[in-house]
Amino acid sequence: MKLTISSNTEYSDQVFNKVHLQSEQILSSEFYDCEFSDCSFAESVFQKCRFVNCAFQGCDLSLAQVPECNFSTTRFVDSKIIGVIWAQADWPGSGLGKPLCIMKSVISHSTFIGLNLKGVQIKDCIATDVDFREADLSQADFSGTDLSESIFSNTNLTEADLSQARNYHIDPGQNVLKGARFSLPEAMSLLYSMDLILVENEV
Image (cartoon, rainbow, N blue to C red; front, side, top):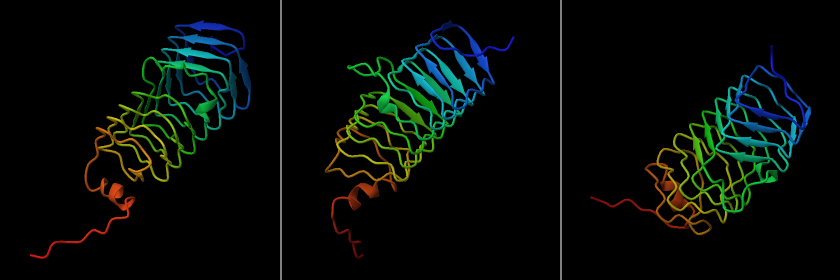
């Protein structure tokens, strides 16, 4: 029997396959050790829901809303998570506890303003025009991620790994970069923000 999702329900160790809840609302449900595969939640609203040790594989959460939702050890792989305002969620004051992991997904036009995302993994993703202002991204891993037009301002990138990220524009004067890892030639963009004049040595 194909599983569906309802409000005010607790789910544990369930596999949801090809569930389509476009533009619907789920209120106060809890999901423990659940897997969502090839599901569509585009433009749906998850309000006051809790996800613990869950995995989303090949799902569409474009323009989904997550007000007061709690995510703990949640993983997204090969998914579309476009235009999600993650700042609406109910993140623990001390951070996520265990890092959120987003891999091989499209998270463009999403918002992480002011969140404590220490240790977050955003790997091999398309992250165009994502707002990371005032977020704690210390020890984050952006390996293989395209950060075109994404916004970093008053962002803590201490010990973050951007050595394999690309197309980022990060002003060292407006962000904390202590111990962060970068690689050439992408790291040249850091110098462009410092109003320096670079000249080539004549041999």
